[in-house]
Length: 487
Image (cartoon, rainbow, N blue to C red; front, side, top):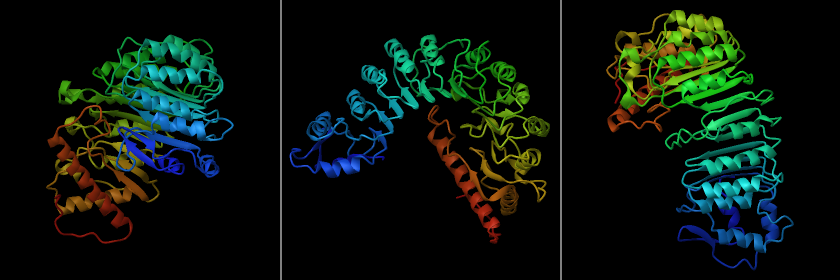
């Protein structure tokens, strides 16, 4: 249920007063039996304070919600007694406190995102969760601002959530005290350090921890938001758990040696990974846009020892340098790989020097026999846009091809465009999809200029044209042969 306002209007019409919704009349003549029938069906609520209802932002007022609890005949005093999942995204303390009215014992999945100085309200919510009256299977909390007081309240909450399977906490909350509390949870399979990237907490808060012997007996998935050097140290600890999935996000990536150290650490400590995602971003303002900024393949070569990988993602606003021999090396080391992303969505043109030619897509498919999803950055300038080679009819095809913000010349001639379309049509299965990014997936971290936005938009339009051509070819339709121009 994405909005509970229509259900509230079963009680009484709502009026927007000031900054909140109020009931238009007293709740003295309400069909509570009817309300109870509908409210009992509600299992999921997704509330965002920024959402609009009838043209206005805002929650129901605390008084309106209190009136429901006061007047409604109910044995447990809750509005939605059978809720199991609540997503709450707010930016004021009052809005966060209203969440308390929805924390019924049946809730097993709780996700909170706070943007604003809401520490006091969040601590109050934690105190409600501390007793064993609510046993969660999944808990995720992302906050803009948090301090030591918030961190001190976490261990008592987490220690009682003995059934917890999936947990996401603010990325600076990984203090030794919090990790120690988590270590004893017998069912915890996924631990993610979440981040509202544009709002950073002080680096000294909760940045480091050590694994304890016998800790995290069920942990399979870990997501870290850390400098690469810290991530390498954490993942090489003597009592580290054996993971199947690892996500690492570094916003201040600047040294290739850090990548190499992390990859070497993982090749020794996590040989049984099936999913590895490395997100390596640098502020474009501080970058030297030259070929020396490319990430050389040799830095990730140690990961070839992780032979069980089925999904591998390395995304960066720096180019990645690799050749046909490197593609064959990856295919030989990762025979079961189904998803591969190599710098798929940079938001600047640093990749033009070392981007891949269009024909490299065929090389990937011919080398990786299980590959279904490929994300790469193409350098399609000049003659390289003309594809070379073809696929054997028995080769598997891609279901997803993500080209990020890869450029293509707007003055390309019709034969080149049609040739590229025909080539891609042969690489994709009939329901396959070509994706492109307007400005890269990390635009929210580093805003781009208006000029760059227009250029990226043009690129997306062009790839949409190519994707349309591919669909026509696969459907057996004839493409127009007249000059094609991007307008």
